[in-house]
Amino acid sequence: MHHMTLAEIARGLADKKFSSEELTKVLLARIAQLDPQLNSFISLTEELALGQAKAADARRANGESGALLGAPIAHKDLFCTLGIRTSCGSKMLDNFKAPYDATVVAKLAAAGTVTLGKTNMDEFAMGSANESSYYGSVKNPWNLEHVPGGSSGGSAAAVAARLLPAATATDTGGSIRQPAAFTNLTGLKPTYGRVSRWGMIAYASSLDQGGPLARTAEDCAILLQGMAGFDPNDSTSIDEPVPDYRASLNGSLQGLRIGVPKEYFSAGLDPRIAERVHNSVKELEKLGAIIKEISLPNMQHAIPAYYVIAPAEASSNLSRFDGVRFGYRCENPENLIDLYKRSRGEGFGAEVQRRIMVGAYALSAGYYDAYYLKAQKIRRLVKNDFMAAFNEVDIILGPTTPNPAWKLGAKTSDPVAEYLEDVYTITANLAGLPGLSMPAGFVDGLPVGVQLLAPYFQEGRLLNVAHQYQLNTDWHTRTPTGF
Image (tube, rainbow, N blue to C red):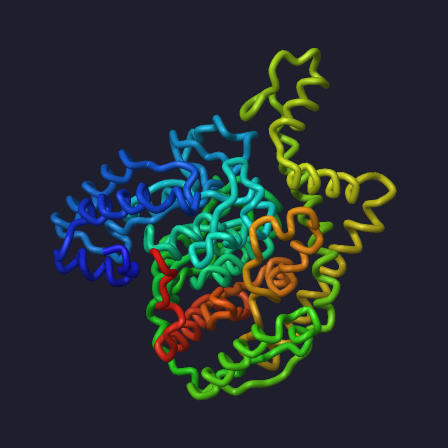
C-alpha cells in the first residue's frame, strides 16, 4: 500500500480494494517503524487521522467520491491546525496549539484528506538544508548522511521514504522545489496568491507560497486542486478561477517553446547536473518541444536582492514573538526589556536571529534606501527579464539546484555557501511566478531535479510538461534503498 501514488489510492478506494482506515493504519505503523531514522515528523496525529479516515469511508459509503476523499497526507508544521501543536520548527512555538485551521488545512480536510501529522522544517522556514529545526535535522532517505533540502525537508523526506503519498509544503526561495530535487520528488510552487497564506505562519509575506510535494506531476495536480482558490481572509489571495489541473495533463507538447537561459550554465553548476539537464531537454525535444536559448541578464543580482528583502520582511513578521501574548517566555524576567531580550534570545535559533538582525539593519534609518529600496528595484528588473523571455517562449527550463544534496553539517559554518544553493529557485519567488521541480536522474546515487518556470497562473502547463516527461522516463519511480 505504501508504494501507491495519490492517483492509485483514489482508484483503490473507489474500487473498494481497501478502506481509508486500513490504509491509514498501515502508514501510521510505517511511520512509527521508519521515521526514527529520518526525523521527518514533529508531531503525529493518530487519533485525528483515524477519525478522519473513518469519516471518509462513511462519506464514500454514502455515495460521495473525490480524488482526495480518504487520502493520507501530512502538513508542514507552519500550517495552523486546530488544537494541534504548530511549532514552525522553533522553540519559540514549541508549546503553541493553533486555535484555528489554516485555509489550506480546512480546504483539504473538507475534501476528505486524512492528516497523519505535522512535518519537520527549518526554523520559521529559514534554511536550505532542514538543519536549523529545534527538533533536530531531517535526514535524506537516499543517503542518511546527507540533507534532504529545506525548509520543507520533513515533508520531502517523508514522501520520498514512502511514509505517505504526498504532503503540503511552502516555498519562499525554493523550499518546495529544492527538497523535491534532493529527494527525487515532484514539487510545485504555485503563482503568488494562487494558494491562501491565511493560517500559514509567515516568514517573508511577499515571497511565501504554499504548494504540494508528491512523487508525480499527477499527484501534485490532485493536491493543488484541493489547495488552490480565492480566500477573502488573505489580502494577497487572487480571485482567479481554479482550472481542472488533471484535465491538462495529457496535452501534446508538439510545438511547445522551451527557453533555456544561458546564465544557468555558469561555473557554479556541477557539470554532471548540467548533463542531466541537457538529457531532459533532449527527451522533451523527442516529444515535440522546440528549444531556444534565452537570457535572464539580472539573475546574478537575485541572491543579494533576495537576502535583503526576505530578512527585512522576516524581522517585521517575527517581531510579534516577544514573550508576551503567546509562544516561549523566559523565566523570571527582571523587567519588560529583559522579558523581550531573553524570550527572543532563548526562543529563536541562530539562523533566525541572523536573518532578523540582517533585516532590521536593512530597514534601519540611513540604510533603507541603500539596501531595501535597491533590492526592490532589482526585484522589478528580475520580473521584467521573465516577462521579456515569456514573449519568446512558453516555459523556461534549467537545473533546480547547482549541486546535489550535501552532507549534514557541511555548510552550517558557512551560511553564504548555503544561500548560494538557492541561485536557480529564488527568482521565481521574487517575480511571483509558478515553478516546478521534477526528477531527472542521479549523481553519485543522489537525486537531481530539473526546474520548469511558466507565466502567471500557468501551473497547468508546468504539470502537463512534467507529466508527459514522466510518462517517458522512470526517474520518478525510483525508491531509496531500505524504504
